[in-house]
Length: 197
Image (tube, rainbow, N blue to C red):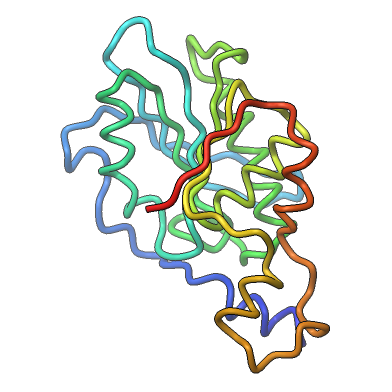
């Protein structure tokens, strides 16, 4: 019951994708890949027209909306010479399932595998970029599969810390220690760039 309440307060998915890369004249491939626990996740592969590419970015968005809301930042990265893999967590956009903490980790692993399967991808030039919740997801992924670099924007230290700020009426002892980014970040073995928007 408590986990369901937390999930309702943490995830704000939208199933309707309002914008695709084609709407801003970007070439892309619509992908479906299956996670280790059997959920089908949707992603978009956006190769840069610049040759050779500067690297390959695995992009994890925040807790609201879906990949359609991240076309413009992805377009800027593609224009700068990076290939980009955008993906939706389970329960978001065209991905099946319902979002959970463990599930988002599975989703990121499946997206990383799909990125590595694309033509011309050099595993030594893969970067992770995470926005807000996506930062927490990418930190966890980076501890298991270190990238060439990790970029975090507006990410948080832990769900407990977020709950103190946004849901102060919930006693901290009732909030699961979900997405413990501050604890995990100490174990990173990759270059790290952090910022806020």
